[in-house]
Image (cartoon, rainbow, N blue to C red; front, side, top):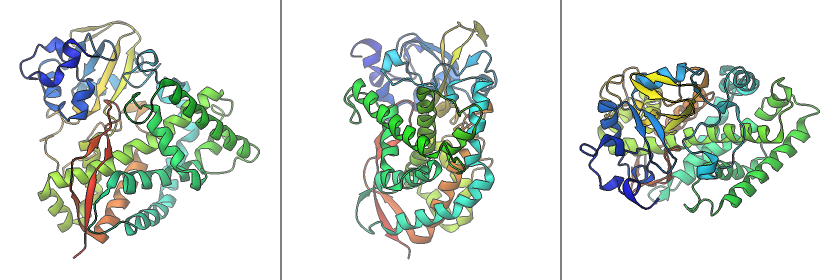
Length: 417
């Protein structure tokens, strides 16, 4: 898009521009961290807001915490089908595959149930020692006093290793999981993929790889991994190849992006708030609480989409059947009506788990406890080894209004005194 409002959001004053012209999905707002004042204006003046013109077509924005909860609870009116992101295949040419997060009950519930035990508390308890061991090895391999990219060396490495474990995926090929995760929602020409055809080709390679793993396990699916559980599950054992791919990609992205970007965003938040970093050093028992605050602050998936199944009056706004309804989690997590002092990052925040980053209701993130566990263990191991992780340059944002994360964060480690 290169003309009109779509090209000029960064040049507009969020406090005075016409409400109808505000497009909080505009990619430049997300690249430059310029979105927050626009979201505040919408929360204050137009919490149910219609944008008629955007890169992704017309859509409604839901920006207040309480209103997002209302949408999450009402799946009969606000359906997850056919898609959970603002982009449609015909708009973004994203490879479209059916997946249980983009389904409603009862299909959603049945397919989710088939795999959710992988991240159930008993299994997480067994995984904690593995996470701790791997986190320690990764941290011990980092250079002291030299600049490196935290995203590559730590955020991606830990999450990719744990994803490989959850899938019982060949460890030597684990970086394929990272690549496929990046490919799913990548914008064409932004450094990850160069064409629609490239996306389709790489995701078909993903399907072929996972079909091979299914074939290897289907005669004896006794493992505690996602694939074996799908083979055993009544609702998932007869999935079509496209359905299988859709659910695999969901589990890859869900198991990768939330944790990866929270690991990076937490380091940046502590650097931006040195008093809070000092508090962490003085009170290491605050780590578990800090993890929830990091996940709120970062909001690693910035939005989820619903599609109206019928005409609906939402606090006086007339939503029509078929309209896109975008729940902006990033905005809900900064809503002072529900979260005291939301613009402050506090490692010891009271009721820190009162955030919307994992969603709510039947679509609440299945792996939320796994994400929290990885972050807690990692920060416990960081605090044993390093006095300070110093951010020494600007981080580079993922060019997306969906995946709210980073591709680069240059840091330098300071050894424990």
